[in-house]
Amino acid sequence: MRWIRQVTGGVAAFQMAQLQDLLATVQVRDLPDKWRWELNGSLEFSVAAVRAHLDASTLPTVASNRLPTRLNLEHKGIDVDTIMCPVCQRDVESLAHILFKCEVAIAVWGRVANWCDVYMLVFDSYGEMTQWVDAQSNTNDRRVNVDAVCCITMWVLWNFRNSMVFGDPKPKKDINSKHDRNWNAWMICPLRN
Ligand SMILES: [Zn+2]
Image 1 (cartoon, rainbow, N blue to C red):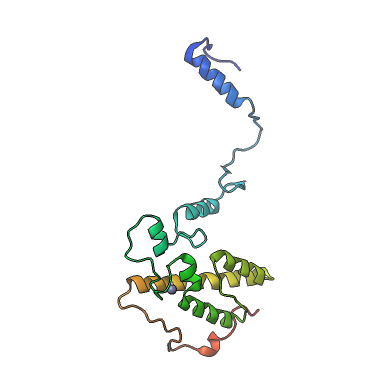
Image 2: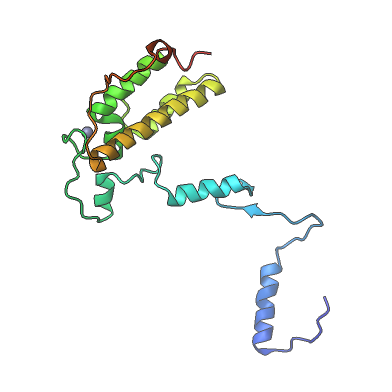
């Protein structure tokens, strides 16, 4: 390599030595440049990978136990009036409690199991639920459908919890509501092929 001006000493020589160290193991190939994504191990850059990383880093998710339950807020040092469940007032409002173990959650999951015509235990955690989803699903279509039903159920339970905390008036806990709906259509199992 030829330089316009020779490096003879001083800071420039030191920096040149550093540069040579850095480049000592670099092999340059005659290939087109491409983005490299190192945060999820795939090395393949994609907008979806960026989105997934940002979601996991910044958005509250069930999987990362970052929903602002009263217990989580207290762990973050936020002053909350109570850490008890706003729905049943019988246990600490953890993520597992509000989504799976609260009396309303247990009743709703039971109805969902009936609707889907599947056997479903009372889940202790989100991880246990995802294991159940995987064990249930003998085809990819079924896995997607089971997963969607479970995600929507959690979303509804979380919305209901928010209504109990912030709503005015508070919603009723009666899950046998008398809305005008077509029950024959409703009872058709959503997982039936
Ligand atoms: Zn509760």
